[in-house]
Length: 105
Length: 257
Image 1 (cartoon, rainbow over the protein chains, first blue to last red):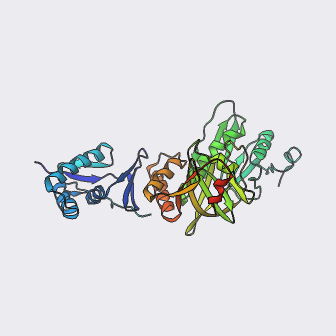
Image 2: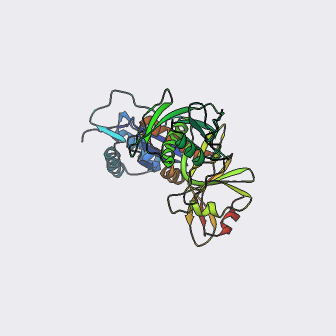
Image 3: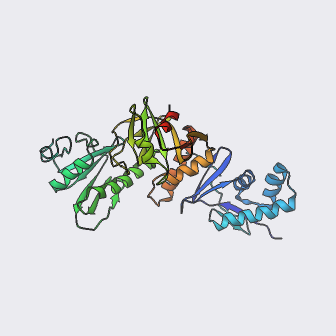
């Protein structure tokens, strides 16, 4: 199984509100709201940490989910976000550092 | 200052300045609409009666060239000057003013929103909703001690730690220009007609997405889209937002302090 690296898109605005991550695509103004687990993955999507490590560290450890299920769900989740254009998936680490997960005002 | 062209025809409004134009001040932001057509200026003065301020220094200005059925509005954001080509219909100016104000407000953390608003006891209340949600109804039901700011497009400006709502001349079915005054914003209600009158709490993320659906926004510049998103998040974090379910009679306002 090859590793996957995920990076947040530059063309989104993201803020935590009421404990939920809200993300707006600046390209088409579509709004997304992530669950707690989704938020953990989103915040860790720095383009350098392998998805398996993100799942292990931020999902399995924090939410007490079996590794295999968690990874499968995480793959589906990141593919969905990638399909929406707010996240990109790569087979290799992304060289450029990513913008912060939460943009300040 | 005023030439008197309009004063003879519209006694209460329509001051026209030297360049032949009308300065329309909405939300404390004066915009000079220049036209060499005195009749059209008089129409503008009448349309925006109550919001005309000939002594205000305009934040931006637009030359209006009257031309049947053609309309465009390029604007140089830096010079804050632009021109419009349009038919001699003052309501076409409404659309242009909404766009310009939404862009100006986006830069400073405010917004225009599809909402009725009113002032009661010195505090402003905003009632947001799509067409048919009850904006005109709630405005029409306003008790005598409340002043209607608009039944269609509410004007929200950030001020210090809070927000102010301003009256607008943008009217819906009420077909009545709002009162030109402002008040600190107390609460925003998401309107919903129902079998009784009650206020239901709304979680912040839901409040933000509902508000985003009602905010007027015209820019495709990703930076401005982000800015508006952040403005709405900040608004929801600091202003109480709740759902107002109401039956269309005067009891609806009993819930508004």
